[in-house]
Amino acid sequence: MGRTSDPYVKFSHCPAGCRDVGACSNPTEVWRSNTLKRTLNPRFTPQMMPLEKLGGSDPNRLLLVQVFDYDVGSEDDLIGFAATSVAARLGRSAGAPRGAANSASAATAEGAGAGA
Picture 1 (cartoon, rainbow, N blue to C red):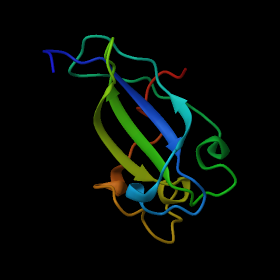
Picture 2: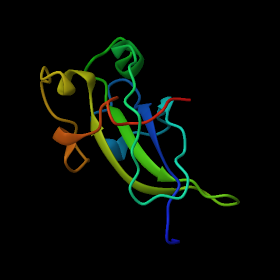
Picture 3: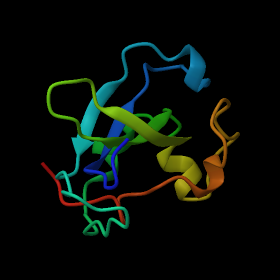
């Protein structure tokens, strides 16, 4: 890694019924922020979006929030991730998703960036 990063945030649904991040194959991207160029201290713009976009028709559906460092000419580097659900963020979850550290403090649309 270089001295700076070009971070962006990506929100994805895991397949319906998946409750373990490690078992989720082929998550569907539902939103991606703009890439912030040359920074180690990103400040993303808060975004508003319909809850249905994040959770589909199931508010307990696993939502994967990933932060990447954009790289030209190679695969982007995963900086970090969290897993949550719309229900968990609203305090209505029957159980926290497994496989993600710190899922209780996972990112929401606020602070996630300017949308694409």
